[in-house]
Length: 276
Image 1 (cartoon, helix red, strand yellow):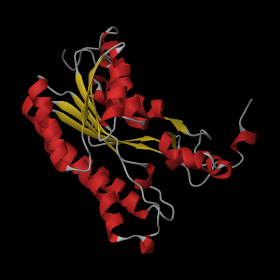
Image 2: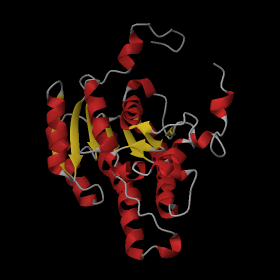
Image 3: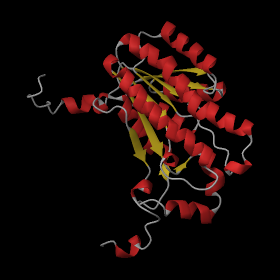
Image 4: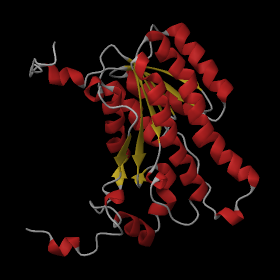
């Protein structure tokens, strides 16, 4: 199809299909990773579910096998050797790897003056260094095969911050820069590199916050939609970035934040001023 030819109407549906593709999800045992694995499988991909919780990854793979195709592996996303070993297994088992997403993250909520060096190193090791190792391990596969989609997990905390989230936010901001740099380096190999940036999402990790109504509602009020997001809403964005529907998107961070970063402060009074 030349640039002057319109896209056939029937072809648009195929842009979102992952039939015959292979996708890998790090952090597949729970939360956003679990829903991402399910979303990718629902669109037809064979999903490699990886997590340091191998039993959890296997449980997710088993739920997928009822209607799709999946396998499970143990991998600690904070360790480069684990990621390299997983990449070697993927290469040995599969003809190609079409998409890969990493979702694990760590936040130790403390002010900078209260942070220990060990805590700093732990957060950086998983969030930032782990993303670096993820890009290298699976980027090499995609470079050699001449295409693919890599998806990292940033956060709204890369753009807007509150006390106690400085170190976490620093790592998430670093992921955004790493995404731009790697996209620039991998474009010639037809490999796309992007990130997602969720805001408040209802998962097991955020359950302690949700159990405190005053905090739960305060965070919800920071969004234009005045609610928390669901893991499935983040997973849908992951599936989009994995598919050909996003074929001209690379080097970007996709905000999945209910409008949190679009406004300066909570949208007080919006409920009263909205038309019926």
